[in-house]
Every structure is written in C-alpha cells, then in structure tokens.
Length: 410
Image (cartoon, rainbow, N blue to C red; front, side, top):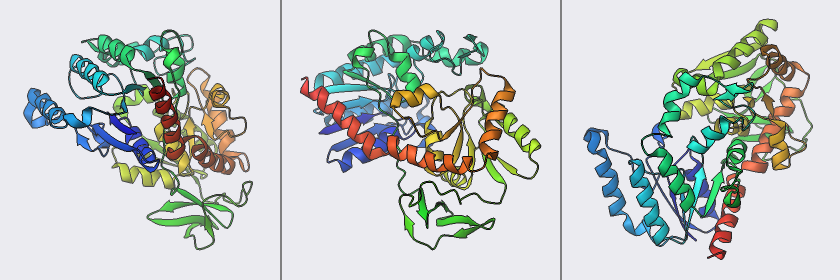
C-alpha cells in the first residue's frame, strides 16, 4: 500500500512508519515535527518563525511543492483535526481535497479535541485532568486550553474532519471511551501506541539488565557493573527476583511547571516525598526539568521508578517508554483498562488517582516499593506488557488490518 501519514503526536506516526515499511508498504510522513520533539519527517511543514504571520505561506508552498505525494495514496492518516500548521478552515479544505484524491482517510484521536473535553465534563472516564470526584476541576486553569479547541473555528473543523474520516483511531482507552457513542462508535477502532523497544532491556544470566551510558549494566552487591554474561532478549527465568539492588530506590520526577495542572506530577511527588521520609536512606529522588530528549531517555533507563501523571487513566507514551526500559511507573493503570484489552495477569503500573484520599495513594506507592519482590516483578511485567501490546511491529499489523478492511469496502 501507498500510505501518507500527516501530523505527529509524540513520535506515533514516525514509529508507525517504521513498522509499516518493514511490512512492505510505501510510507511518507509529513509534519511540523510536533514542536520540541522535532520528530523526523519526509516532508517538513514547520512554520518559519522569521516570517511572522506569513509563516503559513511557507507551509502552503511546501504542500504545493509536494502535491504528487498528497494524491493517489491508498491511505491518508491525519493525527487530529488540525493536522497541518494552518488555520482551521484550511485544514478542513485540505482534508476535502485529500478525500477526493485518495482512496480512504483515517483520522487519529490522539489528543485534546472538543469531543474529549465534552465527555470529560460528563464524567467519562471516571476521572481526568478536568474532572474528578463528581465535578469539574481546575476550570480556570483549563479555560484557555479548552477554548483553544472549541473557539476560532476549531469546533467546526473538528466536526467536519471527523465526519469526513472513514475511520477514527483512538490511541488511549480513555479516548476510546470518549468517542464510544453515536455517531462515532460505528467507525471507531482502538489501536494502542507503538513503541520501538527491543533494544532497551535484556536479560543476563536470568537477571534484568539495562542500558546505561551505552553499555549493558546490572546491579551486583549494590554496585552497577557491566553485563558480561549470556545476554538474551527474554528472561530465561521469568520469576527470578534477584535483580533487587541494595542501593536506594531511585525515583525520577520530570517537572513541567507550566503543564503540571494537566499532569499532576508534583502532587505525586508529595506522596513520594512522604514515603521517603518514612523510609530514611532507602529512596533517592531525582527532579529533572528541561533536559534534552536523549538525556531524559538515559535518565529513564537508570531510574527504578518514574513519576508520571496523576490524572491519566492508562499509560501514556512517557509511561510506556519507561516501562520498556524496565522502569516502574507511578501513574494511570485502572483495572477496567486491563479488562478492556483482555489482560488478566500483568499489572505493571503503580496506579494512583486524584479522587481518593492522599493517604491511600501514599500507601499504594509504599506497598509497591517495599513489599519484597513486588518492584522487581513490576519491572519485568512492564517490559513484557510493552512488548505484548505496544511493539511497533504488532501495532503496525493492526493498522494494516484496518487499512485493508477500509479498502475492501471501496
């Protein structure tokens, strides 16, 4: 198949392309790089800031230059209703053109949009960054964020692009919940986030090892040493729990002060600080802010635990990146999500939520960190979970099946 992926969300399309190409498809990516992520793309749509308000002319020129790539595809997939960095009405017009000149169009449900905020206000899912404990929360803090996807033509653009799409693909369970109602349910297809993870964690003589500073390492007598044993891609002893180091448990907390009202990491940090006070010398907390992406990935691999999001219902891309590296996540892992995907064994996430007393969340974290063998089990289960559900090759196969079913319908 000839496939065009337009827009980007946390490397989703970039990673998906790798899986689709390995399956023999011709894939082109077109995006602005998703801001600071600067994701690789074949056609660059990033606005030239030196042009000020006329930066959109550069984007239009790029679209005109690459008009042949915009036409004649079997599948065009856009990441949301504003898939190119132009005004909303231009996105709507562009999608009409793509609909006419390609065989089918798929729209991703990969982030904020009017439907998600509308359903969150109704308590779907049970809690989110804008709603918990039976009521809207932080309304002033979210005012501008919600206005961005409901005002200035955004609502109309979202409605029209959603109607034109042949299929809607949410990448998170909570997004699926938000869209699982008429008239969207009929063309709704949940497909999980793709991760490229086979080189992140290995097992050496039955013990989990990680990458650190370009070398395979593990803990031995409380010290990090190079792995020189028999390295494999899967555990030879899945129940082996000898990994536990005698060093303090390292917990990584990534700070985003301007976005913490959406994430709640600082609230979880308070829980972690309390656990550390109860267990002197057994917990080491590392706060990081504004580090380059590669440096952050290295810190993820070195940490035992990552503090992610208080308001997330299921694991985000950040959580999955940590789990793939053998790092346990404090974040979203609700039981109904495991039931939705059919997982009855693996429980790799320390699940915290905003609608319970703080002491309950503290007790949950404390139990996971200091119950013998529990942290080590969750490290292994996290790696297994990501491989089982989020390996980019498996995810690409699911997208391929969806594409073929749409093409078969004509």
